[in-house]
Length: 197
Image: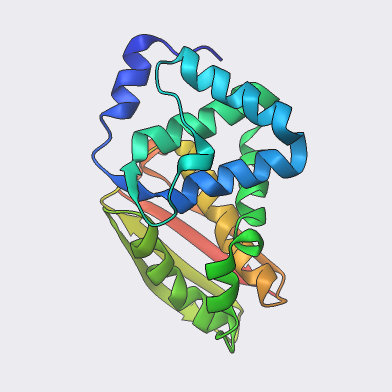
């Protein structure tokens, strides 16, 4: 997939910021699966798009343009021919490799608490939009959440669903998460349906 200059500039105009920790998740994933040579490949793609990222210089709590985060995921997708399902699997791997997330999830006593914490994790990492819990049904082991006011890119949708699954993994629960509504498919907002065993 080669992006045009116009596509890149449109992505960079996304009106949102994301924390550096989201870029560190990308770097960590590449290093685990593809090593230093893989990271160099991603960096070369980004440099070719005139938006280089020095992943090692990224500060976890600093804000960066969300468009750059999208380009990072697109560069990973191009470098390693990743499918949307593999981007989701990448999201699953994110929480277990974050010290802050592991520390906070030790406080979760239940899956319901973990789902409520997703609102906090969202606000901590994105400057725009509202992640809300529509329902939590403990008896049927399912929950519905929405994200409104932040339409970044379909790859972020896949990654986010995986990230929620990864949070469940940390607390020892088998969690599934699917995006059941998406603004990129014509819906008015993003909706994630979470189920667990």
